[in-house]
Length: 395
Image 1: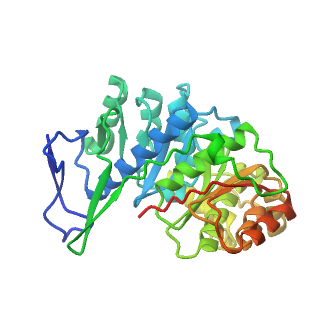
Image 2: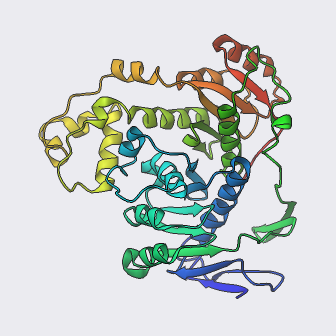
Image 3: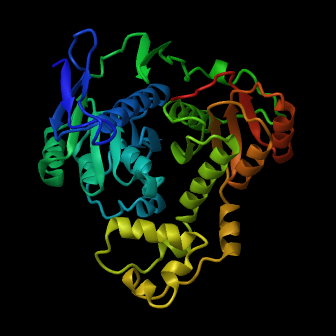
């Protein structure tokens, strides 16, 4: 098949809509279940590129959770400890978590609010363990190079058989030139095939006093940069232990990206606070209600949940408030975080904000007229920073 008709484009009034191969060749993607739409395919194809590159860079299975053409989470398949299993709500799964299942649990769990209704991309064959995790989440679909028979059966039953399941040909490589139209004008450019796996190039220019990048930091900075390659610009990405923990996408100001992503990283860390992990949930609370409630409980607007009898809809007893002082003290314990930026940091204020969320390692393009200020701010906090010389804008 070299063409697939879609229900509509970005919006219901945008008809007709289709995807097709301009050269008449076969589409590299097959629909195994469901009826994916225009935005589904945008998320799927961007997500597939991201996880394919993460796997190539790390040698580990990778997963991403996409929403509106930017990743909400991305991760590689490192094992989950008991704390992560609990905050990602997979501690009740009896099926052993395979590496690809662990990658998906991390990618989905990092920012559960943003991942609601996501499109999933997997670098490796989707197995039964991963399908069982996907089955229980609100999601639009998944793309992977293949599915085990058990996994495919599970996914085809999701949403009464309408769940979108796509298989991508892993051998497919697009043409070196890519095109798109805006207002009837055709744009053409070379595909962004930049290699983000070469340590010798990525860490060749380290202008800070701190110059040591442990192996884990180098891995996590590659994860950040590859994630940013497929995130709407401006964008920054905080990564820890093989997974994105905060992604700031599509902001006009870089400091707003850094703040947005930093706030998400803080929420990810605060979800591991003993008070949050011990919240006394009522039985059979919906997953979305629980996620929303945790987000509000952690925020400054927690009175919306805890005031009066509101808490009775969510908890068996009124939980203690997580005070501002407790939150600050807990966030201060998060260390060793990596931060990537899709272009240079123009001022040191980005580093000041990143430091508050435990950032110890930075990878950015460099080349700002205020590089000296950014370097000095890193030196103030003992942060190691590399100038990659690579801009990763994505639109």
